[in-house]
Length: 197
Ligand SMILES: [Zn+2]
Ligand SMILES: [Zn+2]
Image (cartoon, rainbow, N blue to C red):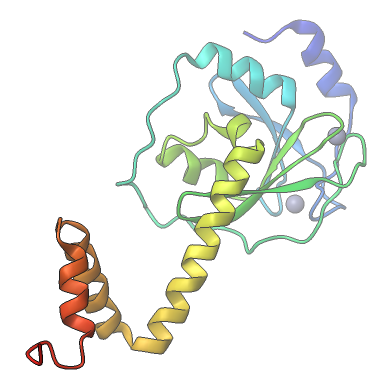
């Protein structure tokens, strides 16, 4: 349920899309009890901070993340800096991580959230749409940074070793990790001549 007073105030304000600027956002039901303001041109969604918190409360316990869903929704390119459509503050970009390349924008002032087209649905497929508040924490951001560094290093290894050899060395490394006498295996491997004792 939405309070009548807040409904009234939504109708009074005109919000312009922070990306397309000249297009006006129109209020729409993102979820049955979550209103967003959508841009008719780029289809991005503006969610007011208080609305999101309210939805989160009503939505019940946090849903466990799903890894198995990827219907290949077309997502926008990582965006340029944008300003809050309500209080004009420059919005802060937050990494989503967990395999996603896009960022979310949050206004430090009014706590409103901007999602580019399909981002809400992509997050929802993985049950990450109820974790936005966690995404805006330093802990989540540090892990997402770590994930980016890891992916970057993987690319370096692949280009250095070649895809096939990299897959093989990764397999061997994982296998070594399961051995209690890993050190002996490594010594055998790196010895110039393991039979010259
Ligand atoms: Zn737009
Ligand atoms: Zn704001």
